[in-house]
Length: 379
Image (cartoon, rainbow, N blue to C red; front, side, top):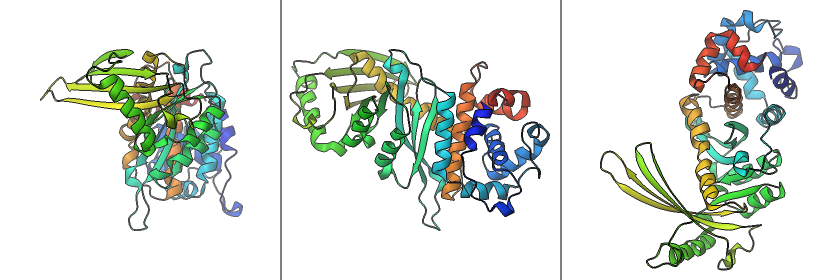
């Protein structure tokens, strides 16, 4: 796996003046990956890791002038083109990790969502926090791609660009309401994948039409379709949740759907939640979805729930285990490239399945035990 990663890193253009280069770019990138796996959170941490592991690193890196300084790491990652680095990352992911090719659409479920690195802002220079759009395979827990956008409002274009670089044929792609646009779902269908997208106010007319239909036919007193096609309970995280899934495949009542490609069903999911401790407060929420997938109501409900694995399996892990939300690297390119390094590190940790321990423990063990780091990197 390390060889494949190095091969992909060979495609990263070295932005430095050739006459002033002392440290090979490959050495810098590999040290940084190992350091981030081993809980490094800053360029100073990366340098400290390299110096403490120099003898071990020399087993597979040339290091002609020893370990680079933290200023060298900072300068290099501030110069590397993040888009080029991201494309190399994607090439590595696709060369090493492949999705299952069976008939179960949920086993090839992919979620797209945005995330903000909140502490990366720089008020003095007028820089907003780094905002990332991630593509996440829920079955494997691997990040398939990411890209940075200048603002949350630019997620739409970023999602379309990410789809161009991925092989998603046969996948079910779920998206929240921020990505509910015809051009995105058309791109998904053009890539021979299915979509399941949440519908909210950014498609106000269509949302109102669908919401009114479900209110009249499913939720109103005496409604003809008051019985859900799927009804389940979940007692976890201190809450009792009832999820009722209503699905209609008769699209004739929805005149605004004609411009949306290959819609097979319109869905309403009612979540009724009550706290099992404290005041026992009860809340209810109804969300609406469009999908091109031909799935049973139970499996549509599963896909909607599985979308949120990107919050728990990626965003939460990045913030709590990798401390990404508190990263104070403010130079835009360096911040984005460090985010890519974290996702490489997470993918490597998740790919090692023989050791049944948490990601946090894997990182600690890799920091302490060179043999285990070699296992993660498959050296």
